[in-house]
Length: 439
Image 1: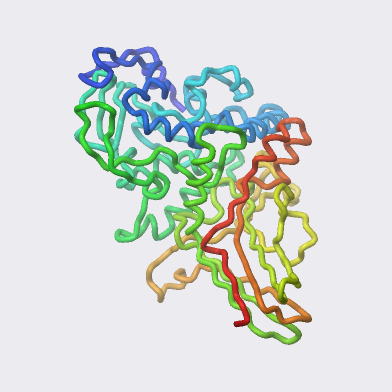
Image 2: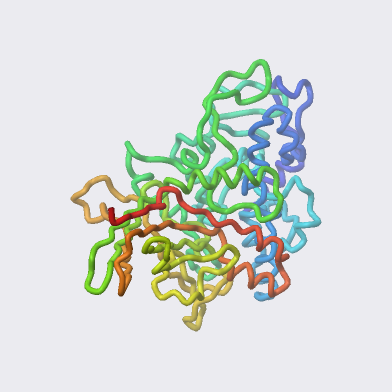
């Protein structure tokens, strides 16, 4: 990737207008520091500080995977991982492999304000093919920005969540293609083929779900106009696995995103020798597959329990906290996750080992036309409870951002502190908590 425009940006000062920072204009280096943005954009910065964008390169799981991956590939990963997790580090060529991230300034960690708001073009939809402007202009969602002496400002559709181009900006990092050509993470691709991207009436950009709107002021200055702002918390599924700023709020935001993503139907019926239970899951609100992102790391599973009175007579998917979902003595266990395979055709855990991918997810809505074969995109699993007819059946769908088996592998290799593994959350999707009774 050509870094010349950015190098120019890094050595130049900016021509500025009037306003919130008084007569002081921010230098190129200052604009890289989100704390320099905080005096005028306090709420946006506070939201970002609790986001996974801020956490992207300091996340202990990311650093553990990076260390293990570079070691096991003899450094062949190069800058692949930091290209999206620490883009300014990669663009400024501050590290050949990211192994020294802990020694680099906070101002270049994660995905900061400057990286998104200097985005000038998107040349490709994977592995961060975003070009940054060298003109010192901070791009935003409004075509009439209030002038400020801190920096020049301009409208860009890439920063406007109501514009389709804004999803291209997100997708350029949220799709990942490995050096061997394997399209490992496909969140943007999944969205682009769904009704959320193709429908003129039901379409939603990435930002319209993950950066919800609210009324407010774009800057903490007297001259600012009332606007429709977008939240910079950007919840998804991943969550900080240490006492990161606003972790409690981020957990709540992620829970809110998940709670209405799926439609679940629980349908028991009498069968020879017992009770059969059909469980149907449909992805109705996630604008991409479910699970998505690094879906080989995710663990989504169904818990189904049946009772006679207070006595539990059947259970599948009842996984205690801290225990792995995979490898259990549970032949009915329904798990949704991508599977990756190595050159020998055997399943592997880590991206750098992967040669092929088998997707297993709930697809997003593809069409609003009920006559179209793509209209039905649910999955159904039948459970058979033999030898007894329960009087109560309950179900729920759970998700963990990372499988406990993967985290334990990183602990065993010495790359991850067990304390981080202990903070791996389990989310239960509210819309999937269902109960049937014989009444």
